[in-house]
Amino acid sequence: MNMTVTERDKKLLGFLAAFMVALLFFVAVFRPLSAKNKELDQEVAKMQELQAEYGDKALGAQDMVAKEKSTSQQLQDVLARFYPMLQSQDAEKMITTLMLNHGLAVQSLTVTMPEIESDVKWYQYSNDAKQQGEATEQGEEKLLSLYAAKITCVAEGDEKQLWNLIDDISANYPAISISSAEWSVSEKPVAVSQSTLAEETDGMESKSTGETVKTNRLTISFEIYMCNQ
Image (tube, rainbow, N blue to C red):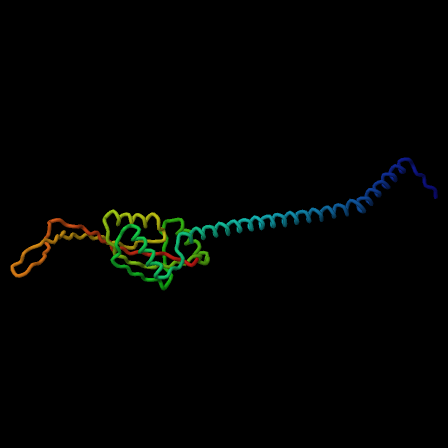
């Protein structure tokens, strides 16, 4: 049986052969490369996700370090405002020295040392009060425990000295709170001694000159705030 292959058949066979070669090349080369590229794309996406996650963790760690430093500095600033835990004789010496520095005469002084922690409340509309409330709601541990030594002192002096004492404590002693104050003024007549002859015996007697001396007396109560440092 003889077959005649025409030029058209030869062209078709050539196209078919080229198509088969291209198909084999696609199957053998392009398809594995496509699968490998897809796998690489997935690996790249995964690495990008990990990089973003680690970047977020690094930023979070930096924020935590910055927050810790800020909190530590704030705590140091707060601690600097209060006295360390004092003994009763230390508190007594502190107030006595304060009175004497203002030229006052101390008539009496009593000291009551704390047995339990003081429950000090912030002013309800202050930022510190709001932060304290948020920390309580979140269950954060209390960072600072305060104790208050209570002192009552009776001192005498002139009006200017007493006012200077009150102004000084209010302006320069943030850890000393004036809880109460009572100011009284008494007048005493000025008496002079004169020699008088008595019928039975010689003697001395005091007579008033009509002048008076004012005595300013201040009964003041303090609270000295202390904390463990």
